[in-house]
Image 1 (tube, one colour):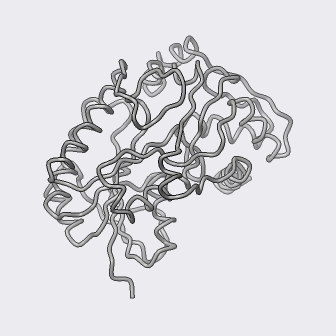
Image 2 (cartoon, rainbow, N blue to C red):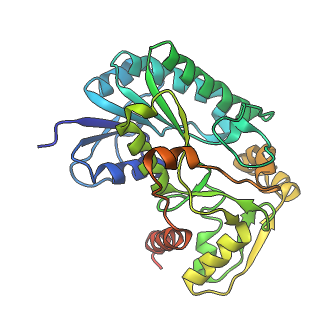
Image 3 (cartoon, helix red, strand yellow):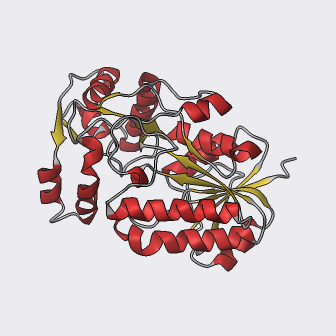
Length: 312
């Protein structure tokens, strides 16, 4: 009988990846979103709750051993809403003593020459990068003050089953499957680390199992970094299609931003795709092992999901 309860905030691609990993463990799974509905297997509980109200968080997590924070506001509302969401979550979880494992990205480092490592300073000059830096600092301060037990897991631009709104999402994989031109972001010949969503989900669960992970930042394991052109070429090969691709630079992204708010928000982050963007995950691997899925296998799983999603 499954008695231990673990709670996932968010039912998007990363929340679903955490759920899939937890299904391999003998735990009860509860997922939280705004609607109380999500495509989940039988036995997985989905509850509607307003995560901006810490009382709701306390109510849905008071019996849990681990909480995974995979929820986020719309990309266009990060500055206004993301810190408020996190503050509510910290306050609600602190009242229960539950471990809090937070999914994060890499914006807070800013433009980096060399490998991205966990010990780099928060040097972002972008709006969203500064927001992420402030949020991470608040989490670590809360841990150091003893109000919440937290670990932070950072992934790069991700792809995989369920991932649509991403640099390596629905602008790329449907085109690959149909033999059309895949429109990627930035300079195709720059090395860029992409995170497979299942590896991100597994890393969150592993950190939730390890007391030694608490109070620290961890870069999740990724396959060997290759250029975006190499990534797409491999994807076309796996799909059995000749490679056709284009890179969308800052000017084109800025033009698209005149009509698409999400595109407008990506302009300040284009530096990540105009220079080498290589993530070092040695700290995690040395502590917990390397479970990164090889690129060809991860891309194949992603293509399979898109085939089913698009009924191809």
